[in-house]
Image (cartoon, rainbow, N blue to C red; front, side, top):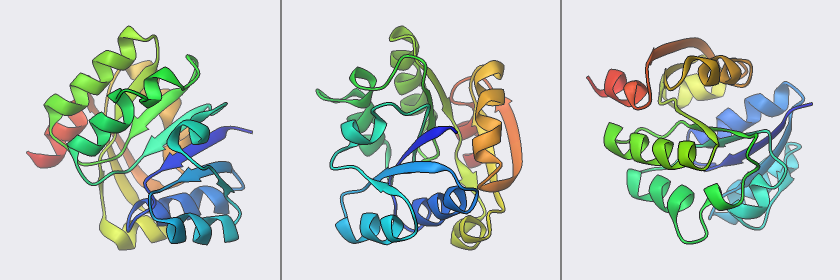
Length: 173
């Protein structure tokens, strides 16, 4: 079974995580809002006390955060995820941010030997709850293909827009 870490359990991330749980996935969750974590633990998720704890042993890390500053801080900060995630893990950022930030995080991940794709979503809260989101992915083709089985549990339409950052560009264009 794939070990999934999900960080960012708000209006979109919470329902996305619920869909992973509906598919009987092992999901470890973290959010700054304890009630968001508790609701998903009640639904079958595993609780982490920090983002670093969430990604320990994860095969796939999914993040859904409000802004580029949050994404960069989480991945690249002094105690960022790139220093804690297994080298074999796949990082999938579903946040809608600027392409330059997605590329910056992805390039740092690449230098660390870790696979990363940007995969912003379309479909809103209703699509997140229904599992019908559209994922617009940017990254190496092999990494995008590796992400498809996980993303297909949360979405109905999965498109590769091109290389790193292309998901962001295609979404906001």
